Length: 480
Image 1 (cartoon, rainbow, N blue to C red):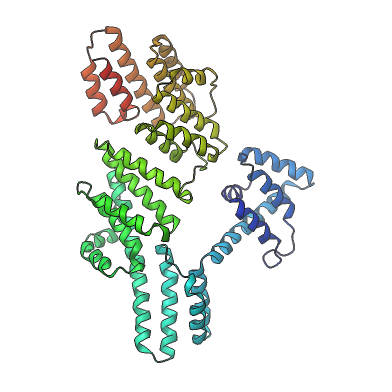
Image 2: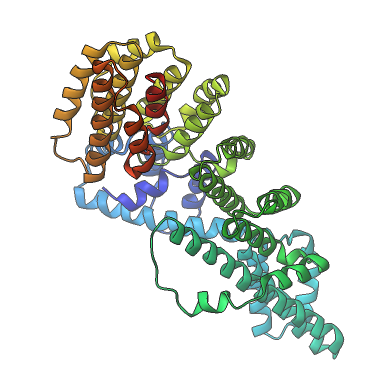
């Protein structure tokens, strides 16, 4: 199995599959071999969202049906992988008007065809749109080439205008990258992942960014828009107690979001989400609503979301569900599950959807429906999913006061933790959940309320209790 090819094809859109078919049919790109049958076969199975295991078995049948040796099929898949990579490069070059013009200019300069540079620029200037810092480097090359054109005409004023803009692009790119990585390093530090600061970070901290951004704001230069957005994000993260900084980032994003790249949008959403979650972890529950509003904006900009990532749990999908439940938007969550669960990777789609429905039933206190799901449940091959289901079985049965059933499920979960393949952190947090449920059951058995305050203090002070913390605190308060 060619894992590189399979993982790449798995991410192709329907439109990319069609263009890839045209690409491998072109004699300009492919000479001497016909990949049509193999292409059609792979397209059929991948577009049906089959699992890789299913496709591997189907490939074996394809090999037998076409009377190919294992080595011959392996060679064809390797060749197709190289073609798929070339296709992506070709597609990117076609779509990247700025990069394409930059490459053309370099060739024109080599041939000293300076007049052609100006003609090409005038014919293509409407296609130039700076959406991201990655556009700045090729655009700076275009400006530099235009400087050479004007120098060939002895127009020194315009020559230096172009060179000045060229250097502006390089400066904006450098500042964008500095702010991006400074933000990453800051979050790494916040999350307790230490790093050794190099010369870059020491230099960064010596720059008076407030003064620099004030100048950029006053000139309102389009080239620096990603720098402004990244600075507002960085400033709000590093000064969490200053009011209005996150709002400034949000307002500026709303101003420019139609003219920036998908990658920049995704980074904005991720950093703002991290910002809000840091506030939530400090006990500022109102920020949950900000995360929820951020998620709703993301759903409107569908290119910034990918629920099909091939790992479980599907973290983004699960985050949308959990946050929606935390702000008690139950109908919204139900619609979200119905509308978007089909986008989940088929390898775990049913498991993730079931888990989302169980969470929704639990928050709605529709425990009868949750119990009906548990009744038909059988363990899957996924340890994380099975553990999650056991925990919700315990929670729902506890809510229904089926305490004998709770004890039985605890025993099942304890035995499950003895299985091979579970990582230590899974076992540690699950054992913490079991310990907490046993403690609260003992408090119930005593019937005096003794130990409740101590339990609450332990839940609040122990970082390992963060999982299901809200539910345990609610149950403890009910016993007072």
